[in-house]
Image (cartoon, rainbow, N blue to C red):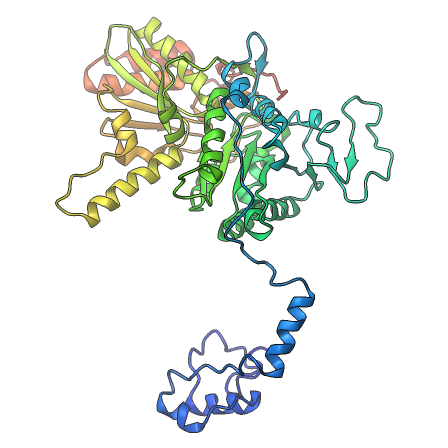
Length: 509
């Protein structure tokens, strides 16, 4: 009965949510019903502040409750302030990410998997990693983990696997390290929460790494991710097969253009959209240091990393790489030495190669000098900018801190064109912190079932769209001929989806 025990004014009336207060008579009736030894005088003294009642530590009721709790093993869950020490991997563990893929094409998913494999090999740290896979291990190239890490099953493997003739067949074991719960996102995020809070509930830090189709993370289990954050879980969420146009062959229900926006609503989640494997290496290393390194100010973090299934030639990490820019959200990946009107091309994830292609087209076809920036985290740049505004608001008269994105783009001349494989709201997060004229290209809508190149042309987020939008902004300033945008649209056949060239048809991780 809804409102049970609250008296005849409440009980069974389905009015609990509308009725906010107990009258004095209701309070007395409630007291009598539960036989609580509080006098009328105590209630009448202040009907709006009735006293709390505790039967005492020696009462039979309290003794019984504590006795039962002891027999059940103590308070559960119980947060422990101290946990076993964590020795983080040294720089050599991340070398595989820094050296690129050579002549072999590899998607950022594979770059991530190779890095994770090396981290799991670390003699001291590797045992703390808990890979969690719903059902796409082979899609992500993680079947290579089966023979060595094995799938956890407390009862071992009691069946003949359908893939038993393969070298990388299913292997279940009580000593298994992989949590493979089948097509079960709810179970997967529950496992993530359990492993991510193990440092406090069991005193043994574990690093859950939950890899899923990006569309089925924050959209499908966002409430459970919030609960994980509320429990101060730590770990990595890997939004694989990310992007609205990158996974075009599995139906529009997979076309994810908005996960970074959904993730941005969770205060504990730091979302990154890296373009290259070496960026992933620095981001993961920084995440582990924040969670378990010395001197970290906020350890209860969940790193969400978007990775793609489109193979590219993964470059080596530049010798002069701006590591601070990588982990804080933006760095210049390619400066143009062409003499001509200046522009800035901002992109993230799989869109960075399109921006590099647009840089070349702008230089060769239009004499425009465009620099390319990899925005590894639009969300973290926004949070930093908002924090700077809040600091200024609460400290009038003090010197204002300049947001990191504003610092990075200081001196960057010309208009900015930003493009991603997500909806416009993702890059628009930084608009207010950028003094330059700012234009956003994005994949707003459900999706477009065609080749990657055609889908990107349909949404006008590809390299040629970046060129035309840049020329429009420059023409409005008088920096290029006013006819240049129209001529460029005709030259590149911009309204024809079949004329798109940004991206390849390779589908392996």
